[in-house]
Length: 155
Length: 216
Image (cartoon, rainbow over all chains, first blue to last red; front, side, top):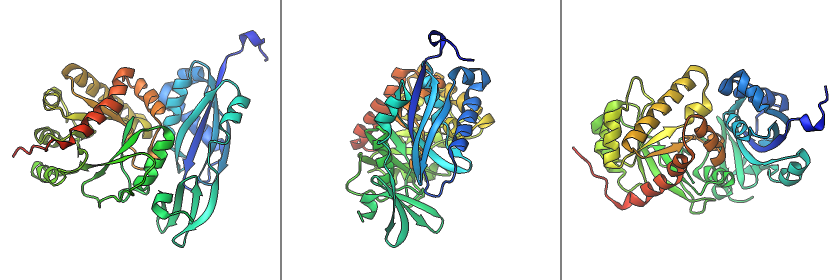
């Protein structure tokens, strides 16, 4: 049912950056579920319903991506806390950082879509590596070693 | 704002990478606190935010703790891997800068006596949000209860405290405002949060010229 404009809930869009290891394979749907469960674990059903936090978009790339959560306009802080508690999605570890909050999706996309560095495949000391901004993730025998250009030098 | 972090060789992220992530998240500096039983971290000369080199002394007994604390006299901060009552007490006696997660262990390892003593000696305690952020269910409930107790003791006796996500690598680091939102949930007031993440770490870092007193 479509409510008249005056009765519609005001919303905020929380833009965040997610960082993972380059081999993480979860998709938007997995992250949405993870956020739901985290909000539910943290607040219970009643408050998480009031918060209305829901992932609307997650553009993923190897090693990270940009996500957007829609929530009630006066529950940004609670959304932040629930998001901060997401540390694993579908078995892949993830780090999240809020970039900013905006009142409309378009305004936020304009402002934050360039804030996340893109991934570039490269090599470091002969090993397979991925760089994002100044960060360099190098594949090792037992996973990844995560450094920066200060550790590996620019290639 | 400061965050107390772990980094390689203890974990998969180098100090420089943790500093880079911290810079992007909006921190002013990070304080490295690798455990004393790990190899020494290599911090490059240039990092995105300053990296202070501290240590988290992990000892099995009181003698071992005093020995390790003496060994790290020159570190920017000396923290102690808390959680055991005897270790917590010895840490206060040794006049270290910080007791990390003092109530992590079994039973009541940090109580009113230690809280008062820590306040007298100027030893800070860590209010670790690690379990709030990264566990769920019973473990998280227990951790939040411990935080409430620590907050109550700290307010009553004036024990300085720091708030940290206790990140083991760059993925566990959370930005200042996220940390504040979580801290608020567990009952930390905003002004306390400011003191815990800025003023108290600054005071600890400024104090590091004072020699660490070892009480036998």
